[in-house]
Amino acid sequence: MKSAARVLKAPLRAAMIHDDSNPSAAAPAREPSNQTSEEAPPRVAGPAASAPENLPGFPPAPQFDSSVPIDLRAPWGWLDVGLFVVFGVISSLVITWVLVLAAIAIFGANSNDFAGPSISTAKSVVLLINQALWDGCAILYLFVMLRARTPAPFWPEIGWRKLRLGVQTFRASAMQCLSGGAMLALVVSFASGFLNPQSRLPIEQILQARISVALFAVLGVLVAPLVEETIFRGFLYPVIARRLGIAAGVIVTGILFGSMHAAQLWGGWGQIALLILVGIVLTWVRARTGTVAASYFVHLGYNGLQLLGYLVYTMGGARH
Image (cartoon, rainbow, N blue to C red; front, side, top):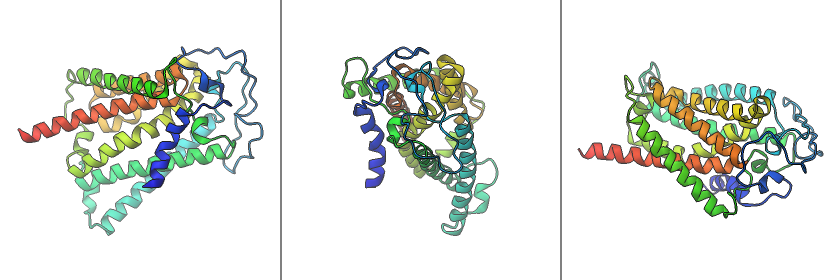
């Protein structure tokens, strides 16, 4: 538990501590722009010219000139994104296979519980644990990838730079982002009230049992915002924005974010569209502030209020 707490605190420490080696960390709330600072020197291969040789299987870090905004000069590129996708698919299949076998062999689950489109309690628990394990594997993969090419600290290098909106302190900036996320959740919940899917959504079937709700709550608040922001706004966004521009990068990253959640909301096309909009807002916050920490706190506020609303709704339904 202590090691897990240290992992969760690490990116927040990176967002609180000023990094003099990263000029973008000192640039609070700014408009997205393809212009770079006049003080920004050409970059050779990421943040450190003395980076270690790449580990086998990892491509070399891309090179940049002064036309690339500082916060987009991430030492990875499209080939790294492709390798990450391949790793993600394979690791998800392996983890799912191992968990299903363990559930059958150790806990006596029925193999029929995992077949077909219906979602039993055993299947929902396996799906949620699978997500948690995959999240850990994804962060570990990104950590190894970065260590293969730069000695720079992992969290600041992948976008968790200092959070300071204007002249506000870190705490005030974090509270403002949390409040913004809560407001976003209220807007999305209000809009969802006008959208009635034809059938029960998969996520509603997953959350039928109390153990599933408990696991989902832990993942949704403690894990999902950190991991998803690191992957989408920290890892993917810089590569997409360098190629397509900041505006298109914000939109495309948001679409990818919403699409990743489509399986949970399949059949609720309006809900999927709203989640894509949420992804675009989160990416805009990342582009606006130059740090993943800002979009993380917005995401945390959004997920926290959404989960609280769901729990109140289900508990109220149970009493009636």
